[in-house]
Image (cartoon, rainbow, N blue to C red; front, side, top):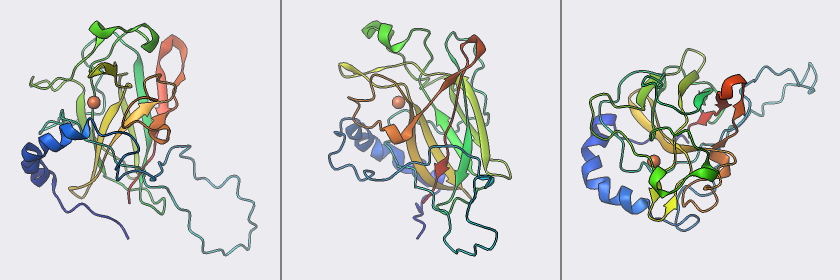
Length: 239
Ligand SMILES: [Fe+2]
């Protein structure tokens, strides 16, 4: 059965104040401890469902529906803001850093694309250094107060359930004495109902291993094109 979170966005916001302590506490929850999200897979992978590799035969009437793995939830963290602006291009500030484009689908557990799903993303400021070169003073932050809401945005999937997002790859920030891996916070809403809160990471980030929340299943493999632009794909599958 589809698990619906019976909270509208506004109601969630109303709860966020009292939930802040919990969110912060969630920031020190150990990986693999009592994480209720454990064991949930992610819908990472190619989005092509053209059936070009179908070898089942023309008369195959199998009723076995494809099953997409539910994208695991992750902690919201303390930096979500109300009133996130509508935009899918966050690269608006001429900041130095690595150009980043993500594309993918939002689907249900039967792999049906969901049109008009609203995706919120927010992330920390970009940085030009690589992970291997950063030091404590390179820690980056979120735009927690300005009206620009830099690196915050929301956008909808198209009629085929597809989304496309562009930004600069987030930098790294310290959580205590340890850098968190570069990541993007995500919420997905369908029909105004919040259906998923999670985080995306990037494959190969050296800080994933010791992070309490990052998983390989939600780590996007990036490819680099000419000029150093990075791109990757991630499909969100809702329960
Ligand atoms: Fe974060």
